[in-house]
Image (cartoon, rainbow, N blue to C red; front, side, top):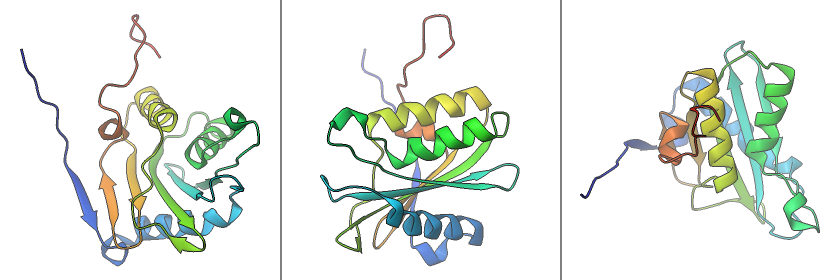
Length: 159
């Protein structure tokens, strides 16, 4: 039996986003300057909007022992869930720069970040709006589930 899974997303220009989303995307772009990426030269910034009105940012932090590095998305997620464990994350914007230029391709989150976003979304019971910022467009997904439709779930239904 063959089945199909699909999702819908928007491709917009940064200036066409609602003000709150545009501000979050600009904050993600600004946060790339906090990146430590001497190996990949791929500076990533993430900005989260929380339901309590707070905004949290994170930047990727590479390490010579490659697995020790942390992506921008998980840096921001972990901080937000540590400081405000019971506050929902409404949206995340992710941006990347290379050689002081916004990347032409949206910064698609890695598998670890997709799983982390999916798990937080599942735990909080509300979708996380995802915005991936490129030089000429912003891809907008209504839910982190769109990025990882077959997210891992344990056999007992809990993560």
